Length: 387
Figure 1 (tube, rainbow, N blue to C red):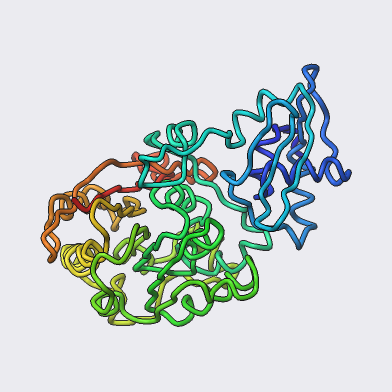
Figure 2 (spheres, rainbow, N blue to C red; figure 1 turned 90 degrees about the horizontal axis):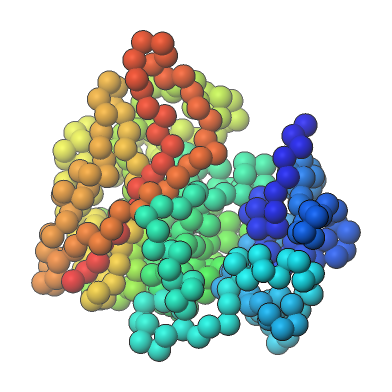
């Protein structure tokens, strides 16, 4: 059993809870950390994993921007969304590190039309990378998500939602899947419109909000069952503040199951593709060139029409292999979409590419010992703006 130890922030990430929740768990004796000579808490990873395995009632992570740290009183002040706030005292030795991970009291610049972040919160989000965060396959709130063959973490989407929108703004996901964007929006106080072709994923996305967040949560958002190419045309122009999605990666899920798919999906009776030969499923298009054309012309440019001026869209994608050929999907998308015009007379322009690092993924010996075959352990977030 591993003896690895981590600090308070890492412990919160492992359990998928807020930092203030970790302090409450320590105060109640649920977690029993050791302390460094400097007085900082250290948590054994095996203790955290055991607690996560046994627990069936871990609450969803709270928004870190709802927490403030009072330097004078050395108290974490957490807004619970109710009429009162919770205050948690911490040791003087931990006060310095706490100021680095809990949002401070600086006001939001009144000239900031984009988000609710102050300067200290804004700056770290402009890095060209961040590490993927997930709850872990055994977490009770990961059981619906893992049924989908290609889910993306709602915690990663929360990064994007909180940077590119203010509370109450409207977010669009044209490939809604199992509801990661909808869950991120619910937890961050945004309003989501999610479009999904397959009824199975559509229904599970609604169930996910009802069971993982709270009863009635799904009713605050719009879940549309249908072909996104048709449904997008029914929505009003300039009606959304942000678009974020992870589209199909062509027919990658339809290829012959490799060792990883057999071990992680088939062995657990989990789906390996989006649909069973649905002709409207973009993943079933035979030609990569035709798939790319439809994705850009009929989906993303239409999403551009729905965005308000100077608003952003983020596309979470990965490169992949098709048999022996390496497909640079992210660069093909950039070339096909950048500087394209929307029907309402605006242009979609590339603003940056952020790398989402997947350092937790298992290394597999592809190509060994004959040829170099890459373990693709990152995704790209392509950031475009309607100008």
